[in-house]
Length: 420
Image: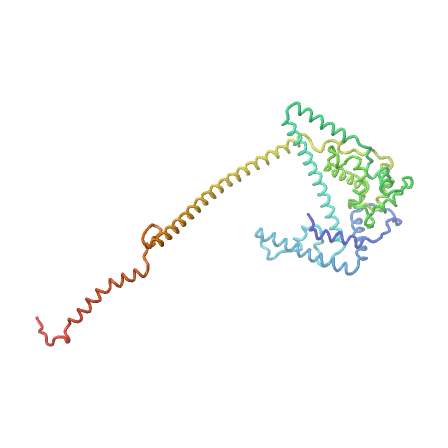
């Protein structure tokens, strides 16, 4: 699993804090048969001892950070369960936390030696996966470069193609002509650093002094960055960023290969760190004093086969076709949007023209004293004119009603005969 960046930072800080001087050259006890349980107990005991030497404020901060990490993991678990509609009313957090490998799920409150051991183990796995991903990325880079080279040559006529192929071969030959590259970690390679980088007499080379000189942060071990810094002189023999024939991506792959070579031969406990004891033991090996010349990438077999290149090119064609279909779909959508935009623009202009014509018509009628017209040309009268018309129509009706009232008798007739 990938560690949280803050948790990794905690690991690096805490390691620096409790990196205390240890007597690595102490007299060993009687040899015991290797047993995994005893080895694990020894590791935990050593880590516990080193943790005991850490200040109280540091331990308190480590405990606090662990509780925060447990809380963060619980939130992640809850979110995951909620997203899958899993009932979590009786969730066993301790059991669920076991899927995370970088802390002890049985102790969720304090930071102990077991947590440190798990952190180191998980970080080591992540780094190994990172190196594997770098190798795979470089392979894809090389296949893409070869694919582009072939496609470029395919587009040339025969005369230009032959000329370009000859130029490429000359560049390859020029790149291969470099000084001898010493095997990384060998006495020849280290003495060269001792002389050219450290400015010391090569005849006075001392492995222990060399180790302390290049332990940049003084933590008692050489980490991967400190090791890779030792290979700069060897890499400069083969790669120069100013030269067309030298590929800097290949230089980084070469640097990675050198570091892995040293770790494989020197890092006995495989913790991706080289202690002084491990370094001194490596100087006693036969390979240290009589190494073979280092084979660069040009001297080794290609990082990919023809079959792998063909599969890679098939993947590229599939992706190009998918991108082509997507591009065509986007082009059609763009054309449709353009047509809609044109229609909306024509409608807007039509509305603007109608408003302009109506405004001009009203201005003309106001100048000529004519009543205004509506949008369809019908006349529109003022309210005063309508009021006058209503009053004129109402006056004769009121006059007739008044005359009829005047002609009525003053009193109604009495004793009118009733007809049966």
